[in-house]
Image 1 (tube, rainbow, N blue to C red):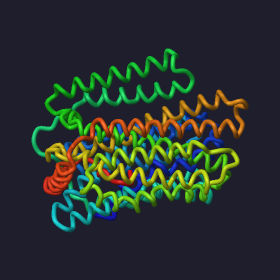
Image 2: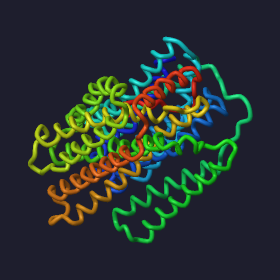
Image 3: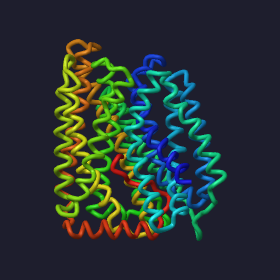
Image 4: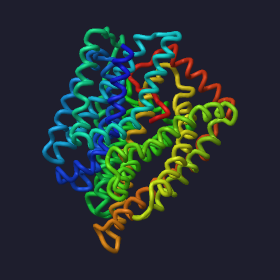
Length: 480
């Protein structure tokens, strides 16, 4: 059971990054525009993040095993559609469908894990394995994407899901026992509609901003997104069973942690796309070598995370989060200094090391504060919100960074040249560095909980989550 559910978590996380290394080849074969190329990544992250809370509700109300199996089948079908796509539209729609079904099966898998390991040492070990797989998924995705693209074809970055889906479906059908939440269960349909359309409109508006910030389409979609999200907040304050209880996000410290989750997602999902382009197009690395070239980031995060965990209990979250955002901003700022004739060792590797150190300092306290002090019955929604913030942040961040990239390309002395591409990538990295500096301001302004209280709350929350077995959520892990 643990192996089956861990495989599920792996493909959900892995598919957020596996196509990155395949994008240059896919763009050339399918004739994708830069905007369509961006939406291959954005479509998955946006659908996943926007529907994650609803997916948890469906799993609890409709049946966790049923939701898991349906999500698994749907994810497999979407992967096949993407693998045989003949144009950009088909590929983007397939990626969106992957996100939809990932939002259904990921919370169901965690709920089933919770039901299978209700307490004790086995539960702790199971969640440690589950979290470790999630943390490694992003790095594995980049490496596996490069391997499959070079050894076979970019399409296998999607088709590779099929055998995993078949194995997980058969094992799940045999091993999983059905369970669902008891009592009165009602879906917050107005909340689902407004938050999904609002986020989609907002991200699409930022995508249109690549052409012009003042166009009717850009202003209209961004304004519509803001209005719809405001309507979502109004609805959530009045319905009996809200999709997102507002008490979760209105806490100043926890709200700050969610905002920092979104900024971290914008960097880890959004900015890293441009790094893969620089490695392959400018430095001329093969997809496989480019995949290996990104490994220092997850390796440094993994090495620094245990040290950050030890320091957290002494220093508290605020210094770590302020320092982490500053170090990550420094790494991204250094990365923005890339040149056409620069080398990986001099211009890229030091930036990845700095970014990894900063992210480790940020991830550890951020994941604690996201759940610290949450009532047991809100733990699932809080965990799902933290993960949704990461995915939505990645979607919006990628749109904003792509806008900076497009603007730099237009202003280049020789548009379409290698120098113009490097100017575009540099602008994207500089925008990401500015986003991290905004994170520094957020950490200074909102993360004000005393260190002893934060440590106590984090420990108390971990105990509560262990005892109450929240469902309908995805674990917040350092690797994400």
